[in-house]
Length: 121
Image (cartoon, rainbow, N blue to C red; front, side):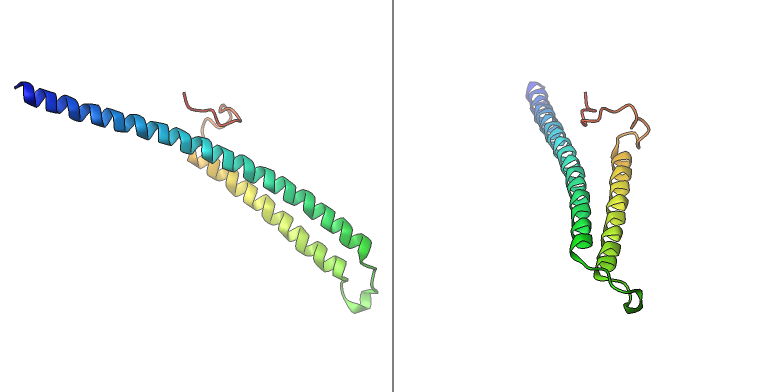
């Protein structure tokens, strides 16, 4: 009976070791995901700043045209940049929604979770 008990103990030890390894891997993935989200938000902010600078540059460098010729290049580029800014806002909303949905409790405790992503004990 002892060999069977030893075999079961060895199997349980392997399973426990595998579970510990999986938990460590999940923690690393969670931290990596938090870092990616922070970097994405930083890039969105930089893109918004760049959009503002490009808009200003276009306004400064492009002369006004009479209304009979249609919109000026500055107007057309400003519209494109405005649309891009709208897309950034939409992507931010999607990202925040995905964060809430990815939370273990479906986002119910989002208001109580720390901002740095340290929600695991």
